[in-house]
Image (cartoon, rainbow, N blue to C red; front, side, top):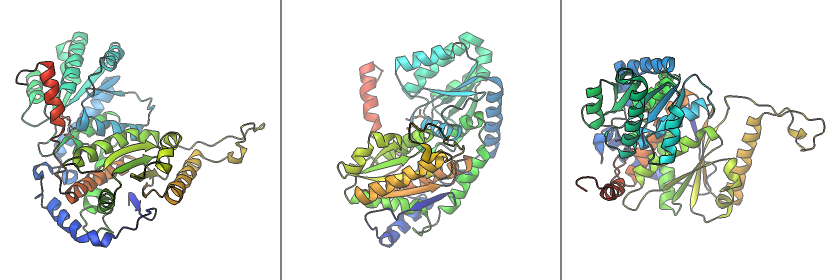
Length: 427
Ligand code: PA5
């Protein structure tokens, strides 16, 4: 099994059996695609229903980008950005030193960020993967306009055309129209899959393939999760058990979920997690506030609050049991730093003891409820499994709160105001 879930570190004792009936009902709604937002459940069986011809094209295009460019700029925001970034950092690390560098644009209006990125690209041979389902997202559209203009000026329209890859809706939207007109190679973000549930589609898979990651193995992980997490029994289906735990805390005065990892390369997974749960559940004045921390780094900042502050949260720890790389602490003759008691020990061991010590402190002294998710080692397969695991958890969790997990009516308000202030026609 790829993910192990421990509930024995909870301070509260949850009567899981009492949730079984509610879980059965929601599970039937999910599997029969009959609940609110049911036209956005395409992600549910995507690991077995995805377009294999397109998957092969993704592999080919990924290799082409790898072989022909120095930099790939992934241009997107929200669900069209976070999953790709999370996966790349989780699997390639923070200093990949690869033959292809992958950077991001389209996720901000910051002129400083955009200026710096364009300056950086001036002397690079770069390709663009523009990702937007609607094709009208302003952050992405502005960045893409700038990137396209720069690339065309640099290499000419014909070469630019071969360096631009668009991931968008199959038929409609501004980006689809533009791609058809310009002749870009395109990949599909299906109409029945919302952005934050799209990481296993071309949205994530093309950047992953370009990074040289094994997307077959990632999809296999998602397939195994798909099969395993159909189970209705809470004790067997860990996504449902986790969803029930989240629901219990929402209803028992713990409105904040702190998602914790012990790996800096998982910071962006925390960002993806926050979007998935925050945008799916933050509605009708309900939903847990998802937050995230990286320990031990943040034990020296928010750790104090978690241990002793307002008792508003529970923690979900994602712990990777086996790091991909080993680093041994050296012996030092003088031992002025007093570290010789650790000489010969691996940093993985130290990280694990920090985890165990913190768990004990937070649970037994701080009385903070902790759920622990263990993953033995984080490779493509396990990450594919995890992505699916969290999406399935989120669907169950939002439906338990009687919410539509797949819309985001709240984010339209700021857009309307902004368009009005910018003088867009019709606002
Ligand atoms: O999860 C979502 O649906 C959103 O975060 C979208 O992904 C985001 O707003 C970007 O939308 P689009 O892909 O249409 O540019």
